[in-house]
Length: 269
Image (cartoon, rainbow, N blue to C red; front, side):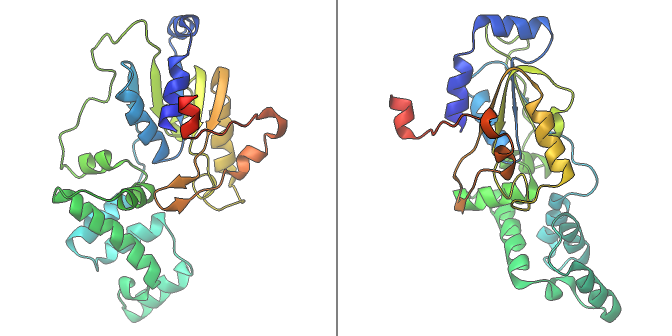
């Protein structure tokens, strides 16, 4: 995805760059669910001079807050309550009623595969804290659960110095397109000559396959309508060891979408 988006951006004409700067808008807007948008954004920041990654502040308690507590104590009731709030397991109400009524430990009453999945992510954070390299699968599972790229997770935990995610030099390169990468929610209010919506796959948007919520539909429509000249939807068929299917939402666009498959041969054509 990153190479394809970068190639398309490199072909943007000077007139589009000048038009966007005249209107005080980014030339390119890259939006999508985590971790796709941040992976693409990091790649672009390494290859273009005028790139800004705008990570929306997390509202309320987040999964990472729960993981922070589970790092200290894997049985932390508050830690599991926070994780459950953001990722409700099956039969969540009955689990809470049993635990409160009989003074049981949440960890012991939650489904085994649910506990195992989240403790894998806690273990991955612990490995990163010890400067151990995570596997691609460990990193992708953690980033999906938390909704942040690994570097941002470490920054939030205070393990790395926060780096400037702006466009390099203060002035940037006036001849190059300006690029903003942000979440679907963060796209609201922005406009750009060219928009790339990345990672539009089932289980990411919508989270429930084939059953998008009203909020997810609105986020997708907002992303589509940010574009002034072109809008490109980019999907991939795998994330780590997770097989992906294109989002149901794409099918709603019908004949408005023309499809292009990108593989290794595409880049050597």
